Image (tube, rainbow, N blue to C red; front, side, top):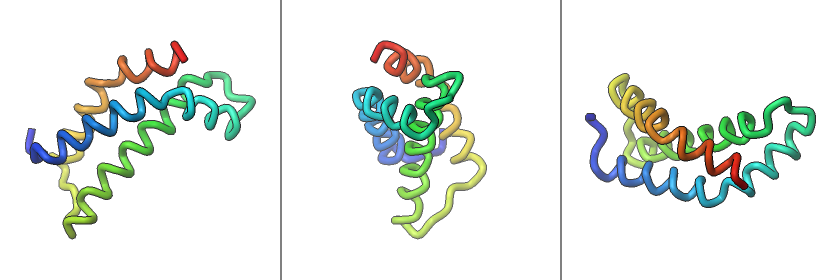
Length: 92
């Protein structure tokens, strides 16, 4: 993994934050898309989008852009933690 320890720790903290706040984002998903067939999937998408935005912001503040390896590392982190995030959404 080529992401700096700082970026990895930041992403881990973002993932934990969104796991703890899953209920709020589930309510937001319900408001945005009340006819959704899968509220957990909509919520998951919103949360991943927020984490992705934060990921990009870390590069922007450093006047940098993520390269393809950074994106692969980000994807790996998202996939690795997806089960935990989905469980937090379903159990709220």
